[in-house]
Image 1: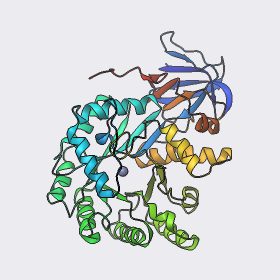
Image 2: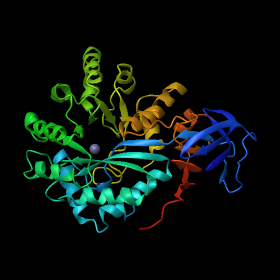
Image 3: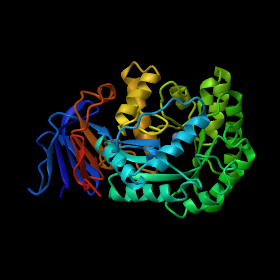
Image 4: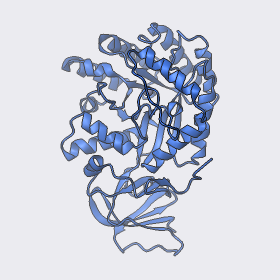
Length: 403
Ligand SMILES: [Zn+2]
């Protein structure tokens, strides 16, 4: 018996077809009117000729920092990275709404906009203790399976320069985090080996993956990438290490990019880009050609760092396409592949590739083909997660609207 029947939908621009869902998976795709629900109680969606798209994954976000759902915050100008870090701490400690509530509201926005998973970098520092980790873990649980959330214990204020952080990172792995994070071992901590000793030491001790922010550009950044590659291979941590932002790949000439990209791919290191404003965006397509897995994230959403971001990964896919000069349908669909399938692989979700047998994780949007959806960024008419409708017309359906 089908648990859901979607009528009059299109897949990859072709159709119309009916899509039958059973036990959380796509059980059958057939010509319109061929599929009849065996049980009149089976819920039926009329897609109205809408396009099925895979649901998307945010591979790098910071829900604990967000002001989502709270009054507007007017930001002041910031001259240095230190200014930004200090304003982040000041804004977080001034929030009257809990991490759990703000994260939950943001997660709800993600789901309503068609996301199925996130990798959340959550601040771990003496000023917060483990409160942010617990808040985001609770928020993810509040979503009742509508959103798969992974939590990275993220040392925003540095590891070596902020005493007590290394011990908190270990504790965070007992409080909901499943990945150990790092941040500019050179630029923030000024101690490349000291921070990486802690991060890789914890990773191997606790058998967890690694995800390191690396803003440092040029040779300084490349030197750190090389050391992360060396340690990844030495530990046997291939396919278990991610570098976020990785602006230094944008500073490489063709020869260095080819060499560094091949070494990155050989070590199975994932790169996460967020297609941020005036920050450099790594050469995504070239890196993919070299065999590097690249995922897409939002980074901060409406936090002290930036007023931008909205939890809409189709919108973020549009920004990636815009910033990398996408033109052809193939270019645009490659960006969608980054946000959907590479992201899913990163967070351990099966690919939602809309084939029979695949997870029933999709959204229905008003577009003729996937490339158009990347440009138009329509609000999903429906979002289906593991075979159940979790959002409709931009609002959650299956999940309680409030705590
Ligand atoms: Zn980040």
